[in-house]
Length: 81
Picture 1 (cartoon, helix red, strand yellow):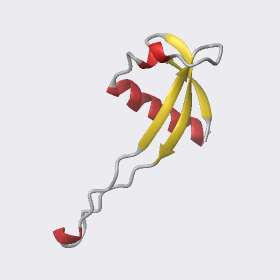
Picture 2 (picture 1 turned 180 degrees about the vertical axis):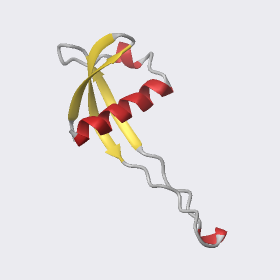
Picture 3 (picture 1 turned 45 degrees about the vertical axis):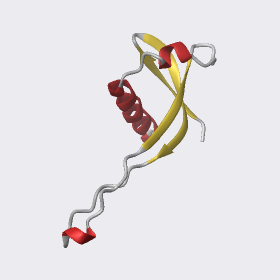
């Protein structure tokens, strides 16, 4: 997988290159509690690229959890077209 989409981080235009994505699995909370399943979080791995297509680790260093969640949402919207 190598999906790439335009974005910005800390007011800097860049591209997000998605290297791995696995959707999460919702928890199952029906029936007897012995059969409940906690589900799984999604897996979202990416690299940020500068305007020349080079890796921008300096942008990645300042990412917050909110930034990562936003990038994952942007990726899902990008995939939907």
